[in-house]
Image (cartoon, rainbow, N blue to C red; front, side, top):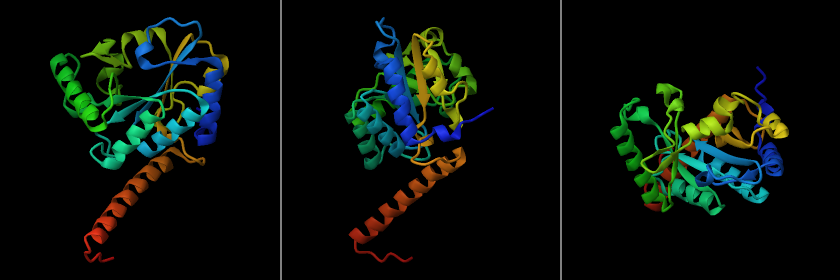
Length: 249
C-alpha cells in the first residue's frame, strides 16, 4: 500500500481544499439531508491530538473560503478542554467560520451496543461540558475509534438530538475518505476529488497529521507530545516567576 506521507503538509492541504471547492459545495453538518444543485461535501476533523494544528487548518480553510466541522475530544491525553488556552483555540476555530462538534468515546464509560440510556446520558453530559466551557452550540458527534465495539455501524442518524456522523444516512448516501493513522485509509483524497464521482462526500481528517513539513506519522504524534510537554513547562515556569518563587533547574 502506498501511504502518500508527502501529501500531509499545510501547503498541500490548501491545494486540496481549493480543488475540493472547485468540485463540491461545502455544507454544514445540519444540512446533510438537504438536496442541492451541486455536489456537496462535509469536511470533518476529529481532534484527537492537536488543537494547535486544528486552529491552523481552520485558518487555511478560511483563507480558501470553505467551512468545516471540528469535533473536540474530551479525553485526549494531548490537550484538556478545561484549560483556558484550549478553549481559546476552540473559540478561534469557531471564529474562523467553522462548526464545533463532540468527538465521543463510548468505551471510556464501558458503554456497549444496546446500552441506549447510558449512551444518551453520557452524550448529554459531554455535550453540556463542551457547550458550557466554550460557549458554543454543539449539534453533532462522531465516535472515537468507531471500529472498537462496532460503533462504525451504529445506524441511528441522531442520538438525543445530536447528528451521528456514522449514522445510516451517511453510510448509505455519502462517499467517505479518511486519513486515519496518518495515511489514506481507503482512498487518496486527491484521487477522490479529481474524479468527483460521488454526489455527496464526507471527508475525515485529523489535524495532527498536517504539518508544515513532511514527517512520518509517529514523528507527527511525537511533535504533539513534545508541544504538550513544552506548554506544561512554560506554564510551570511562568507560575513560579509570577509568584516570585525559586525555580531550581
